[in-house]
Structures are given as C-alpha cells and as structure tokens.
Image 1: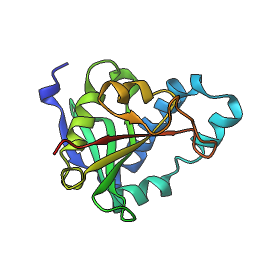
Image 2: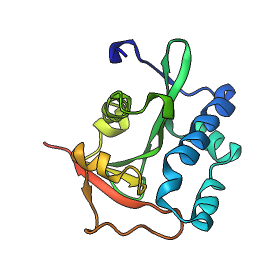
Image 3: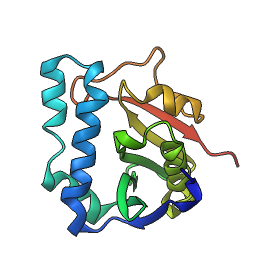
Image 4: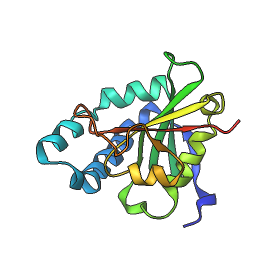
Length: 163
C-alpha cells in the first residue's frame, strides 16, 4: 500500500453510516479484547449516529480515502476551556488496513490541522488498545501507569509542541 495514495477529506455528513461502520468494526474486531463484556457494550453504545453527526458538524473531522473508499477517520477539536489546546477525537482505521502505516499517517495529518498548529498542547483520550501506539508517536501519559476511566475506558495522553 502506498501511503502517498491516501486522500484526506473533511468528513461529509452523508458518509456517517460508512464511518460509523468502520468505528463499530474496529471496536468489535480490535478493541473488544481489552475490555470485559459489560465495559465493551457500554463503550460501544456511545458510538451512535447522532454522536458522529455532532462530531462531523462541530469538529475538524476527516475521512481517509484509498482506492475510492473510506478506510479510516479521525478528528481535531479545540478545548475552549484551555488557551492554545486541542484534542484528537474518534480516530479509527478499518481493521483490513491495520499495520500499514495509515494510523501514523492520519495522526500526522491531524497534527497539521490548523487547530493543532495553533495549539501548544494536543491531548488524546486513548483506549487500552491504542495507548502504546500513541506513546510510540511521542504522546505521553497524564498518569503513569495509565489509568483508564470507567466512563469511556480511555486514558488521557498529551504532546507539547516544540516551540
């Protein structure tokens, strides 16, 4: 797979079902191994059509296209309670395309989003399945060892931008 053939587009609300399908598939095929059944069902239930529509309408949310289909997604939001801070949201790669560098490329693309460029700090709520990946990309744990909150199963990771 040639990463140079990936196309990044701002997410279109008309693609919400396709994107949600990728998210659910990733949760069911990748993330499920890290949570007990009750936790997993609770977390999976948070990923709804209305939740995703809100993200697409209010954040800088991207679709990653390859070979004329959406294969990944992820977004950036501003934290208006903190000056010069942004955070990543809902980053998922279709399980058929894992281990090909797409996640790394997507995070790099998000780091170049105008909201991230204008930020001194980028935060990401990371799952048990992805925290080691973000650590390899230079993100640090807010708490170490990581503590995963009961509400959504994530731990907060961050990266200060080099000035």
